[in-house]
Image 1 (cartoon, rainbow, N blue to C red):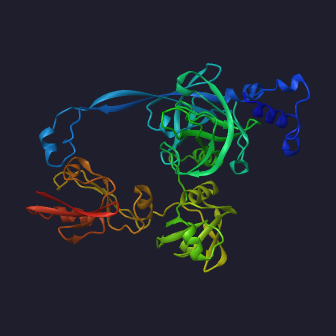
Image 2 (image 1 turned 180 degrees about the vertical axis):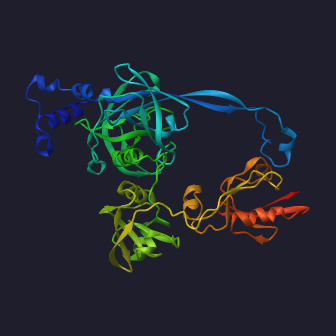
Image 3 (image 1 turned 60 degrees about the vertical axis):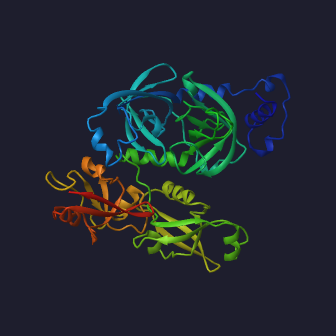
Length: 462
């Protein structure tokens, strides 16, 4: 352990606080202070997770996904089930066996085995999972009286605090590494499946640490280790943890009976204010998010916020990127209200924005084309705010989204998330209109779709 760490640990344990940080060791006993008591108290609440996945394995060729050549490879490389294993860590959050881990560790698992520090084993099931945040909440079967870690509000964490990362790196067994909080409000910097807002630490985190605990010197959970920034595959001293405030929100929704995470919907698009934009707005420094688009059903618009306004804070916390704002809304919780501070023409204003899920209005009218229809099996839904959020569509999207390409839709080039806007130059706005258009027999069909930011036309013969 580095000398500076020993001095800092002693300062914290001899009384805590900034005033005690000036004390120096007075005896050999003080010099021998270590993390051992802290580890003894917290390590039993960190578990190893072994997950099994059943996937389809098939021989591939570059032409198999091509709409024209795919017919020549029909029946080639029949899918066969293949078992894959995943190794990670988890943290016990309640005595009855509520556990948090990363979605990429357990999210799609068919069999989950959890091994405690005392070598007891439990089976587990996923209560709630979310790939975007890379979090999953598990329930151990038949567990009671387990050790668990208490939450600490992640907004109280400061850069420079001593932290421990506990997990199972590379499958070698439970391991503890030490470091400090080296950054806050990191967004979009991590290598992994999670997207959003992170606590950064230099405590060594490696593969297998995913889902493990990041704790402070009082044994409180401040984050869930999720990913690293690396070129070699191992720790380079830049690791990321999902803040405990977001984890607590996930636990609350899991206990309410939700199986997927419902995050508040902003219904807006914006970008960070850079130095050039700050000067144009008359700001003394860059900061905030300028709104560039609002959906007609956006709760921000209903609260009086408009395009061109600059959002600078949510519930008193500054926001400088869209992921930060969504994080602040997420930890606020559905059904609550967020106090928004925003600038309009140099004036600071406030608005109370309701934290609500994306409305499923108008009705999505989901349907699947039937046997005998052109492109039978094609799944369709009408675009509305809930569909926009679910398929990550543009706010301006309108028409009919493909929810399942089916066997025949995939052959002609349709993909899940494509928005069908016209068939043979005839505009379509509802799934029934798409079904009707395909029932009109024609020698060929031209399907106009919006894919991402491009409009393309797919042509095929009947």
